[in-house]
Image (cartoon, rainbow, N blue to C red):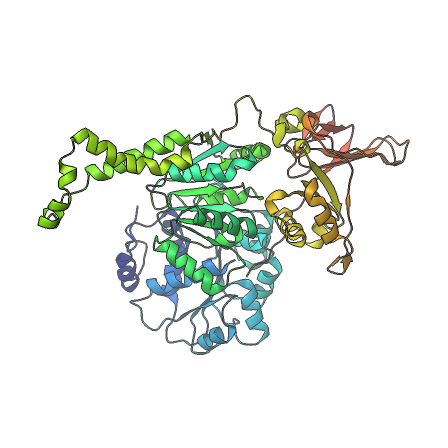
Length: 633
């Protein structure tokens, strides 16, 4: 392995990175830096989060920047404000011994006037999120038509968040003669298309298989009932509390805030990060987390993009991400710089198929573990407490005459009695939390839904959506066409009806959705939604019929029309709704719920949800729900 000097990095930059503790280059740095410095070619890099990409492109750019020139020479575009701030801080640190280079961060949520002032003072490198950069360009406050270098960092995430048009607009305003460096953790067709349009014969650099996991990370999961997830989370944190430094990923802003509030109330050193926080609040939270004043950070996928914190021991998935690729983004935040890390998933019974998809796509092998029992937690905490006492050095100077007089009564006790009294005080703290605490693990006799759940509705168990007693299914005339996904629709209904999002389960389709809720909440939901409008569309909500429960996966059945041989089947997460149309015979279409499973048998196809019944047609087309585009700047 070559060192940074052998890669061609100049002395002023070497001095800075040595002070920062850089010893040996990472693989992406070792491959990228010489190409950037010596060849003059564009670079297309496949690299996961946390592999050292910022130094890989940052050091060569800083070396090639001309401090005496006053125009913007380099543009770095990234998806989130956190990553934008992190990159700008890193570039400033690398260039501390190379005077005259100005780096300006441009992102939403901060004063635009202040950013304009910084740009006008002179900026050699702009690090920006797409939305704010476009706003400044349209205000004529920034000029990028003379840039020499353009870097697209986390390009796949920018496209996932809906920034494709913004990125193309920005690139269209850069000069034809420039060097482009694009980094992405995955390489879908959309990334290739950008590369083909805006890059000239790029050098392709890969430091890992697309979506592959870090070998330093242990991937674990435990299966619990959905209602027990929070209790299981606390049990896991308690068992690992001596050294835990973790990010817990949730799916919605409301869930992030709710679980964070509960943990803080229960005495845990936690806080949260989500899109509803102001920039000042976000920076305060991240400052406390980086300084270890907070040991547990709750975050959504979007809010956590760009967080670069060293030393994380655990990444905990309260839910698996909606997009399988995001699992590697999440888990890659631990196990960095040669350290070992744990990626732990709290899995409920409907998520089994998604776990298998991650294993297949990411070349990851998950290890099933059990949630520790209350006794296990108590014993481990007691062992840690006794180890602390054994390893405590006695400071003789504190035992003056007053102290010795105060402990005379203790000295008179027998050693065994003294130890038992002493430990009883410690053990008493556990008695309330752990007395008669139940086993939170799924009984082995209960079969997890998922891929097999589509073949046998009974495997959904009592956790399948169709098997929840006392629930009603509500039809709502809003869906993906209105900009909703599962998370945002659940938040919308919960906020409208004034109930907790945890009380709801939803299926979101193109122009309509279903809400599963307890009967006691149905009137509130109907009253809150009916008669309202959403983006000028009238909202209609109605109970869609009595649900069948139990072993067949639930759902309802309706028939329209008659005699044609074709059918169309709409499946939810655990049940299905069938509709027979008087259309041309022979064909059908199946619309899956949260995921799709296909099975070929004699020319037919079948699809199942996580716990739904089996559906098959003699001929059919399969439609998957496209991932909604999210724009967060």
